[in-house]
Image 1 (tube, one colour):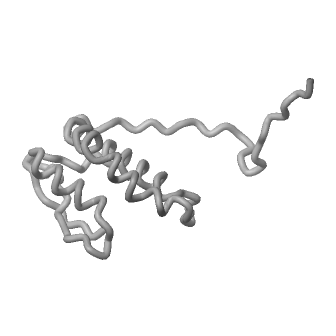
Image 2 (cartoon, rainbow, N blue to C red; image 1 turned 90 degrees about the vertical axis):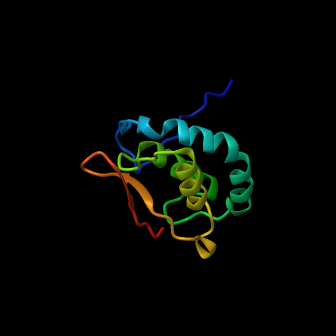
Image 3 (cartoon, rainbow, N blue to C red; image 1 turned 90 degrees about the horizontal axis):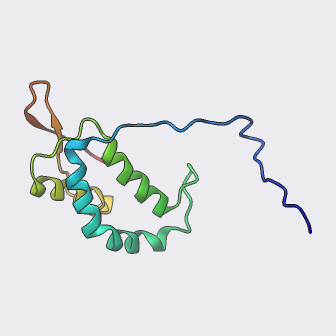
Length: 120
């Protein structure tokens, strides 16, 4: 019986520890609901583009999942209602060419909800 050789990458000569980032609990329920309701349609939209790899070695589905995870951990994002969250998140996953600018809801220093303009 032939023994399997462990694959290695010469570019990684040492273990890299995982970087842990706390989730923004304020938004978790809103993002959970959006992902539960929309992930299958988003994945279907991104799947045809998955064969194209960007400069960071990510495919379209990788980028979709990375964007969703970034939403969970964005400490500045602050939704105050489901309507606001759904509007912002739906826009976030719309093609840039047809995207309507939506302000990013952020928490101000005084604790009140503010909108910060984004152009992503």
